[in-house]
Length: 530
Image 1 (cartoon, rainbow, N blue to C red):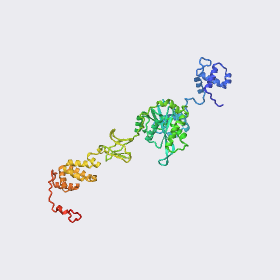
Image 2: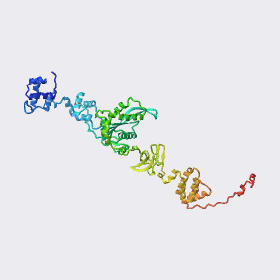
Image 3: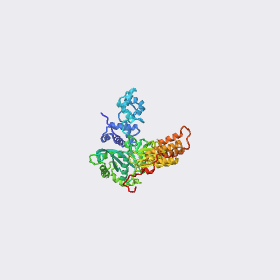
Image 4: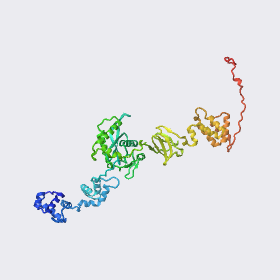
């Protein structure tokens, strides 16, 4: 006859009737148990210290112990032959199947390795052993977290919806949805974007706060690249821009553990809900059309439905208890999303940022700097110190502060002949006059290199020597820097020391000078006065 197991309640009913003095034939007729089974229950109970009709009534604990003892099979303490073989390798199996770090070994691979070590067991026996002693293959125990307060947590996640037309390119582009869900009320906002950049991410959250009328105190998100630079279970590194935005709005960033979507379940289930219930099967003109209809959908169908968990309407619950608990948007102006870069200062004392050039003091040439750019300004930092601020330029633009150049190169870079002439006058009157004539004309910057060479000759040969040479060259209207250098070198001759003066130039009489009357035309008959 097959074994038929009865539960604890059936055994308890039999014991209570026996304890009340009811006959066993009567008990068998009412409960359907045989008299042998009733006798077996009573004998087991007596072994456990209970006596029929005694002062102690049977209870659930007693009947449960009787039911456990009557189950067929070996006693729990008695192990099988397979367990005896596998028990010495328990810790080794634990390290293979559930390592503290790294990837776990499959049970099939563990079975092969055990066979190589001489442990000859069946795979199914190994599976039963692992399930019994290592909790292998069992669903992880979950607990339901306590409900959060109104306005405390907002969960954020990106989800791919599909393709939508882009009027700018005339092609269909991928469309992503940034979903922001308030955990307490389950009210949500959906922002449509073609990309998942940090600017799109912050813009979507800003519109979500406007939609809700306030800011949640904590934002829970996964390790998306737009917000988290380096994922870590205990101390993740957040994107510098997003960290500044969190301080700007006054909320705390809370990142989930990597590959643990169950830590933000309220928004995870909304991604397929938005895709299937709102987007799929609809015809949209472009991204803006999707956005308008998504906001209406959040206030209508999604906001007024009966939520499967809370059994409440999210929008009604939000208006009732959560809107007033949100942090006010102060300031109400949208966050100016900055961009960051770490370029190196070029030899021309400029850096390239967003395809535009900005000057930096020459002392930082060749060094790596940190650049922060927003809509209006570009700030340059070196080791945390602000070293330069410029107005933001579009791609291809350039901003140069000539004070960033060395003093001796600023005039040349600015193409300012007046500054070079002033410096030349400081070297001597004749040098200043020579530089003035050299840089005369409509395009003085074409001779800037010669003017620079003139100033360098003053540094090399001395102001007095160059001033005398310039005086000699001016006497012959010789405005040429190369010839001026030759005059100085010839004046030096074989002397090793530089001369302090140059001989005075004497103008000799011109041998073939004509009188002014020779240039008068006496044959002009049209002029009656001559």
